[in-house]
Image (tube, rainbow, N blue to C red; front, side, top):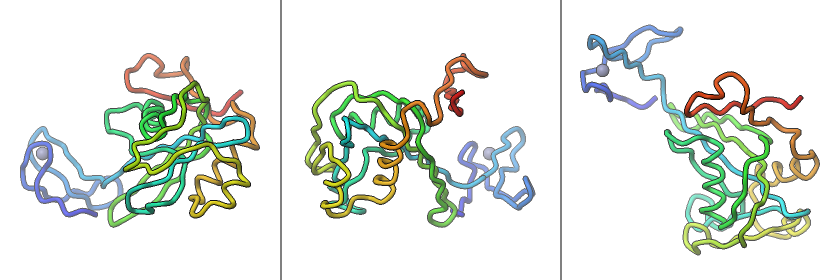
Length: 195
Ligand SMILES: [Zn+2]
C-alpha cells in the first residue's frame, strides 16, 4: 500500500479508521470522508479479426520492447471502457473498429498496494489500413496463428485471447446491454451474458 500522509481531497493529515474489515488511511476532517482503499487501474485490449488473421502491434517501448500483442492500454478515469478500447485500437494500429463483446478479463495483484483489471474485448473491423507511429509502436499488421508461431515474443495472453476469438462465434461473449438497469445513466456501461 502506498504511503499517503495527507488527504488528496482536503489536504488534512490522514489518520486511520477501521472500515470494511481492516485499518485504512482515512481523513478525520468533518464532512470529507476520504478513505484510501488502495490503488487500482483498468487496462483494456482488443482482438480485431480479419478472416483468420488477428491485429497485432509490436511494442517499441519498454517494458517488453519488441514483443507483439493485441492493441490496448490504460483506461482514463473519466473514460467509458468500451470507448477506451476503440481509442487504443485506433491510436496504436490506425484501425477503426467497434466493440462487439467481452472475451475475457484478467485480475492481477501487481506491485505493492496496486491491483489491475484488464478487460479483453472483441471488436469488429470497420475500416482503415494498419499503420503505426514507428515509435511507441514499431510495427503493426494482421497475422494468422501459424504466422504468430514463427514470430518472436508474441504475448501469451494476446495469443490466448485470439484463439478464443477464432473458436467462439462473436456475440457469445459478454454483450453490452443498452436497455438494462442504468441505461440512461451517464458513464454507465453494463455487460452481461447473452440470452
Ligand atoms: Zn479530507
